[in-house]
Image (cartoon, rainbow over all chains, first blue to last red):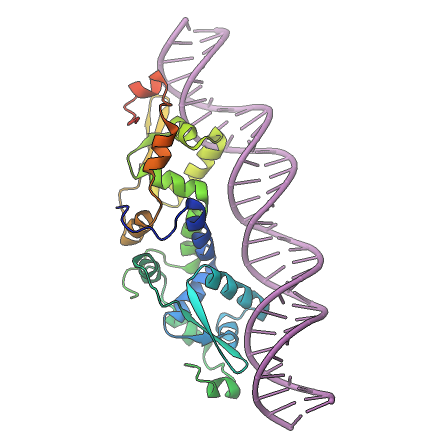
Amino acid sequence: MHVTTTSDTFEEAAERYKALADKTRLRILAILSYGERCVCELVAILAMSQPSISQHLRKLRLAGFIKERKTAQWVYYALADDQTPLIQAILSELPDGKEEVERSGAFCTDRCLEGEATCS
Amino acid sequence: MHVTTTSDTFEEAAERYKALADKTRLRILAILSYGERCVCELVAILAMSQPSISQHLRKLRLAGFIKERKTAQWVYYALADDQTPLIQAILSELPDGKEEVERSGAFCTDRCLEGEATCS
DNA sequence: TTCTTATATAATCATGTAGTGATATAAAAG
DNA sequence: CTTTTATATCACTACATGATTATATAAGAA
């Protein structure tokens, strides 16, 4: 115990947990554990408004949980590369994101499919 | 990945992370990682009001992170017994609670000391 | 019993946060 | 160039949350 410390202060650590303290953001992490997704895919899968999803993605990105990749007019989000043991444990104890994706069925536009999206 | 799942739903998982999304509650967990403490000790160590500490302890207890033990007029709190890999990872990546305790110096009342408290 | 100590809870207030609708930006299509 | 598509951001509203003050409960002490 008390070996690796990713946050220098309790304030910083609390900020990271605030990013996880939301049902929608946890669903996003579970979905991204199956591969990157563009915003419009997440909007379709989660059946929520685009501004709401974008704001959640911003918080997850600022907290360091996800990264973004811009291609043409799409922005693809994926889990961040530096997966600490803590983040791995967080992801492993989350409900499975597979149901989230499958329940949504086909939703990608033709143009989104052209853009390297990993549509199911 | 996706092996053990402590929360059945994303809603439940989010509730647990909400309990961690506060600087004071993380400090309490770091302090309790060095042993159980009664409420009045935590009030002294954290230099915060007693109702505020009690409310934080309530949230940590309802989220399953800590347990309580009542003796006479004191209530001692300690880390919960069932430490999952996730909770272990959370505690291991927290700032050290030792400084919190030491910085506060002597603070226990004579009566609190009689009550089996692990005062530093 | 009365007073003091330890803790919990309720009411209130100030602040933070999620969702919505409107708007801005940027890229590609027509 | 105009339109459409994808995304981000802003302003606003409703709701959640943390701290404080006051109060309630319970156990000792006097």
